[in-house]
Length: 147
Image (cartoon, rainbow, N blue to C red; front, side, top):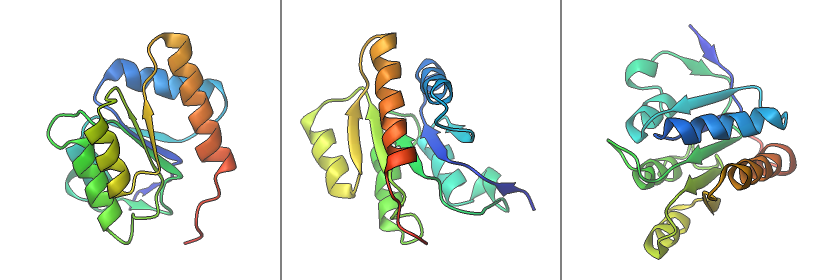
């Protein structure tokens, strides 16, 4: 049985944003292992080991999930709702990284248990700087609960 070791799950349907995010984290030596999932349905299958990911084991939960909201199939809000309602995944830090700064989205995400809500900055330099800062905090400074 294949074992999946990872530090971050990135759930992002925009390939350019995904590439920039991964590049910013790697450039700053913040991650070695990242899984990029392209929509909410794939994210839930991966996290809960269903569908294409059934039978794959993970030795531990990721250090963080970076989650876009506006995605095809299943929205980021639905992914967040499922993650935070399941005892096995409830403690995984979820950072919403999205272009939406709409008040209802912000409020809903925090009500559902998001650990942070970041609106994607415009411009390459601002975007990569923001991703590097959030990676530094969630991967190096934050102390997750012991399972």
